[in-house]
Length: 590
Image 1 (spheres, one colour):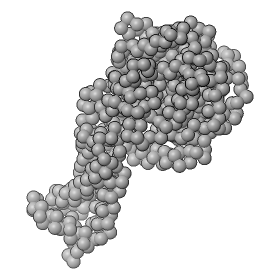
Image 2: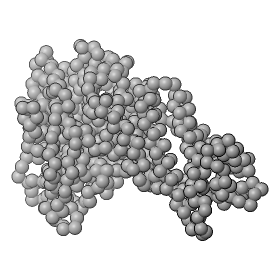
Image 3: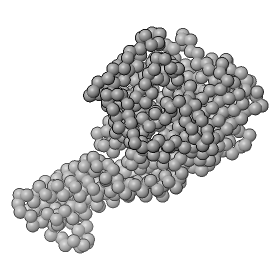
Image 4: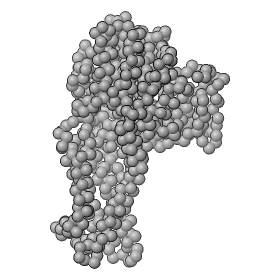
């Protein structure tokens, strides 16, 4: 590999049309992106397909064993133990819209942050805790949503000291089998002024005063591969009895474990028991850090003899996840039962945001258009066949039914089904399908079949509303001159159908999330809410680690200057402490 100095790192080149960034080997242009629109149907379908493919074939394309083999002869030495103290940043779930991603990159790149009379120096080590890009791990998405904003926020400087960057792969990083993750984070390249150092998707960092950071890779909830286990066995041999350990993992499996269905926690528990709880060489387990859920939450052991904190800090740029459905207490965790001590946003604020789904149609316009088009297609199929023995169509017939005469209206729907058994079977299968795809929440409040029934009920309501919309628009278009009446009818079905169906879907998300505790992801990805971003800045000294959880209620609206490779804003960036600093002491070992 080339020596990384100013002579062999290419200069940044500016182009008036596009933003240009470079690392030590390549020069790329990037285009700032809006937040991912998760309800854009093509995007939703493409991400779903990648997720299914990566889940089905992930074990066949598991690059961890290849990485372990290729890196086994390299002298990895992530050793910072010669320092008296060290600052470490932890942040996850970034690489989404430019404004949110750049806001966080700009903040962590500052020389220091002053909060509540605390001056927090820029971290020597930056750990990205998973899902460095959304929605999928393509080269273009990494470039536009991650590398570009970070290069702009903290440009390469050949003279200054270079902070080091390490990354934990999340499920979105795994969607291409980790191909682009390895190129970006495991080849000792620069990302802006940060220098990547790891050679594989897992790593161990030796910090001052016998502190260690262990980052594990539980690929899509799979077992931990043998070479990864051997790697940490070799690290364990270098450590002292009583060494203090911080674990980084890609998901808060203890939260998902609350309903007893998540296999990820079993892998984490196995790892902890094998390496941290060995009676012959016990370590002090201080802290678990994770992302995946896009908010801040902190759990603490009920047993006061256990010092372990479990912190989720997923506020690096992706849309906000709710906190109001997090369980207040989780039992049967390896250390002890754990209690929820703090969330950001607060549960009350999170619950208020949920009601923004009353504007689901407005916030997800393309989804409404696609649904309206599907609505129109089904109506067209019904219209294409004469209704019963009458020489007319269903919509023309129901236009003569007086509005409010529900008995006759439902009678005609029954007659429609008798004359079109395929349509009837399709509607029945839709309700059954909705039952089986019901979202089962982490914090299980009811039996699983309750969620299935509610999901099926939602499907049934949408079917009924479909016919009501046809009835409604049939009255609106009646009396219009031909042939324009047919065109207006189609437009009305498209518009009224799209608005009605998507509005009911938004209400379904609100009610389900509020009373059943499910659809956390669906009900908040629809909002694309950029507020409540957060990260952790940690100060490690001889006897303790002090964790500063830093939050930003509102991100900045940035104006990008493509000529100067910079961004400016009139908004004030106001970082704050989410809660008082969390200090974990280990005096007895020093």
